[in-house]
Amino acid sequence: MGSQLALKSRIASTSSLEKIFNAQEMIASSHIAKARDVALNAKPYSDAISDAVQALVQHTHIDHPIVKKRENGTRVAVLALTSDRGMAGAYTSSIIRETESLLARLDEQGKQTELYVYGRRGVSYYKYRNRDIAGTWEGNTDKPGVEVAEAISNALVDAYMKPDEEGGVSELYIVFTEFVNMVVQKVRVLRMLPVEVVADPSKVNNDLNAEASPLYSFEPSVDEVLDAILPKYIQSRIHECLLTAAASETANRQNAMHTATENARSLIDDLTRKLNASRQASITQELTEIIGSADALNKKEE
Image 1 (tube, rainbow, N blue to C red):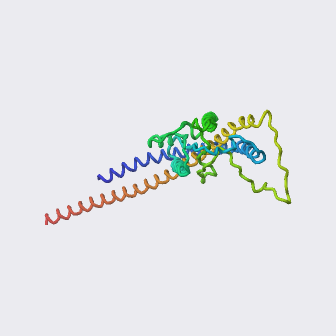
Image 2 (tube, rainbow, N blue to C red; image 1 turned 30 degrees about the vertical axis):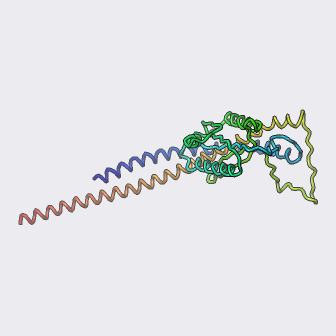
Image 3 (cartoon, rainbow, N blue to C red; image 1 turned 60 degrees about the horizontal axis):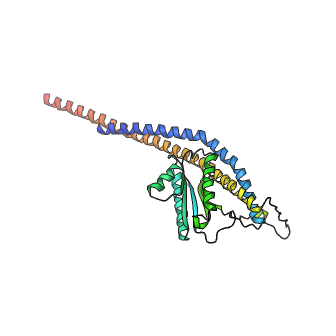
């Protein structure tokens, strides 16, 4: 009887959890389509401004912090995009693991790292371990707005533009989860500053099909133009990363809650079979005792 009460209690608690998991899955399912569309719609603008900066770097000889790496700079800024809420599987743990790996590589190179964290889960993780954090942001990781992207970009641009003697950083990395599709989300490390020149194989010139390089003129000056582009470039890249990370978080939460719901239902079925077997064993024992008692009485009467 005691085991049956324990099984009934476990079945009731697991049923409650199954309802919570199923509700979370339905909520995530209702949000994923919009999150995916928002992330995809933000990509063209970010790609366009990135291509413009890439073109300037490739076809001009400019001396500006947006493209020039400080030769003696030893401080590096790393931004990790985690989540505010749990129930998203290994989403935050994957980001933290990749961030720790990046920090270890930079330490081996003799770099001093400054950590910036977005998301309550990541902030709690590093604060619990007494890790120094240069900046934190929390709230609405599944629906990030332009305001938080602007706040993050302002802080990072200020740190990047500071001189070395004032604690400025010479490089800027961001660790986030890229949304590929509903099943695949990849953790990526992106170096935002200084801008890296990435050659496009489809546009490589050769002797048979040579193209003239474009000429650029800047008004009022190249430094003023690039000073205006730099904040927009950083903000657009960060906003795109926030949006694709939000879509990845929602997809991870839907997949995790779907798996949790199926596991809860499987556990309930297993516990129900055990409960039925226990009931059957109890009934069989009672019948055996009744039959044994009847036989004993019959023998006594004889």
